[in-house]
Image 1: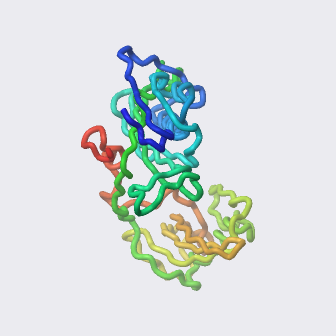
Image 2: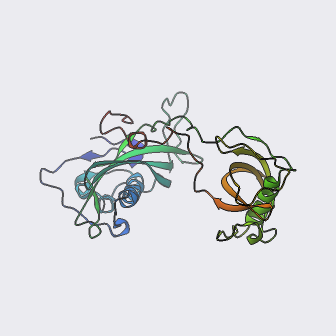
Image 3: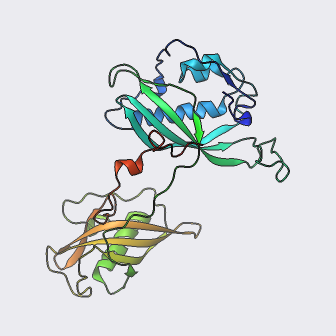
Length: 313
């Protein structure tokens, strides 16, 4: 099998041994899966990074992930290309203890243009970087929580996984924040204390709610720009004191200003609860509520390459 020339600094030829691959433990990736994707995904990221940086003499480093790499012939200088960032972006359970992981890697180093007549090769790697995707097959070794992971083949470079459309959220339309809205006043003061360190955070929290300010404070100012009521909820008379126990679930769009003057938009899903005639923050939800029927399915979040060939290139 030929592996893209510049990726390994030349060509690589794989002679597949006929004997079974001996599982190898990789201490850095020897993480208990515990029913999650954490272990295999972390292993795949380390493997892809080592693969991208591989070159002549790198067989031993690759064999720590993929034992058959000892029979791979590599040419070119190791480290010509590097994976500056890696992230597992798709995860499929092929069988118990066997997974397919797609890893995105931001690759820096020498590149060759698709058409050298249009764009000459970049031999130095200066300024070259790109996001590329590699599909990796990972198998568990040993009992759950006691073994490690092993790759069963070299990575396969694939096209960018498809992206679905934006999901529908369970909130009404966003409207400009009104300064007279008592809820907006609470949110403005709360986010100021939370993100800029201005004021005491606890005074804006409902009893029993525990939140700590972001430290060190990343922003110098925060403005509540827009709010959206939870679907089906009717906005109360925002200028009147709310009745005790009343609840508002809001999607809050803000503009936060950094020390350099850059404005960064942020969105929070916030639950407000009324007490003593004022609104208090009862929770910052982990995620905005999705509209009914918008919950993603397993098929929509896992690589389809194992069944439909999606993502193979």
